[in-house]
Image 1: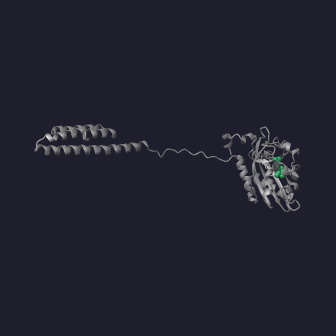
Image 2 (image 1 turned 90 degrees about the vertical axis):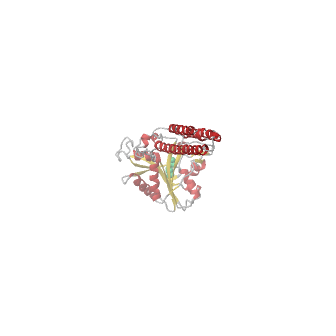
Image 3 (image 1 turned 180 degrees about the vertical axis):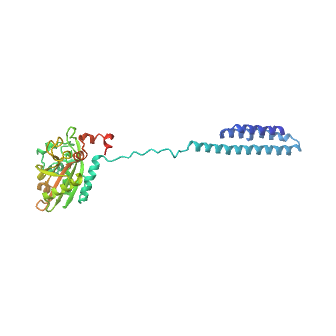
Length: 339
Ligand code: DAH
C-alpha cells in the first residue's frame, strides 16, 4: 500500500508537469484528490490494515495528499502568473509610435468674410440679427413698397409655398421685422440665405447670401450712408478701396443708388473683369422710403434712415479672386483648403 501511495504521488507530479491551463489542472485535482479519486480509493482500503500498520500508512497517505495539494496550488499560481504575463505582452502599447494627427476643419471662405464684415459693423455699434427664410409676401414685398403687380417682382421671382408664403428673395425683409420690433435708434446688420428661381451658372444660384444693413434715427442723411460705406469697405478691402454711387431705383429706398468699387483686378484702369469700366458693382443702397417707415409704424416726419444690401458671394469672390460662384458650393476640399 505504501508503494501504491508513492506511485500515486509520482504519477500526480508527472502529470502536473504537462499541464498548461486551469481546466486541465482541475481535472487532475479531481482525478487524484476528489471523492472518487485515486487517493480516496486507497484510503478506503485502510480498514483492512492491522492496528500497527494503519497509523503508519495513514501518515504516509496524509503526507502524499498534502504534497499533491501543495503541488496543485503551486501550479495554479504559476498558471495565473503566466496568464497575466501573456495578457500584458498581448496588450502592450508602443508609446513611441507616431500618433495620428486629428484632421482640423476650417471655416468656409464665405464664413470668413461674413465674420469679418460682422466684426466691422459690431465695432461701429451695430447689432447682428437674423430673420426668417420662409417669409410672408408682406415682409418680402408689400411692406417694402412692392405691391402685387409691381414689376420689381419679376427680377426677384422666388419659390412660393402658398400664394402668400415664399422663400425670401432678399434680406430686406428683415428691415420690416426689425422696425416693427424696435424703436429707433436702430443699427442692425442681418446676414442670411435668400432664394430666387434662377438657373445655376458662374454668377447665379437659386440660393445665395445677402447681408442687409439698416440705420434709422433722427437726422440720418445720405452723408451717413456714404461715410458708413467708406469706413466699411476700407476696413474690408484696405485703405485704397474707392467707391462711387450711381443713381438707381429700388422701391424701398428714395433716393436709391448702386454702389460700385474700384476694380480689384485693374485698380480702375479698365480690364476684362470690369468690362472696361474700372469699377465693379458691389451693392444696392439708399435712404429708407418714407412709405416703408410708415408701414412699420415709424413716423417719417421724425425719423429717417439708410439701408443697403450686398451679396456675400460677390464680395467673397472679389476678395479672393474666385471666378465661378459654383466653386463656393461644391465642397471640393482641393478648393476649400486654399483658404
Ligand atoms: N434687396 C436688394 C436686392 O436684393 C438690395 C438692396 C438695395 C438692399 C437697396 C437695400 C437697399 O437695403 O437699400 O437687390
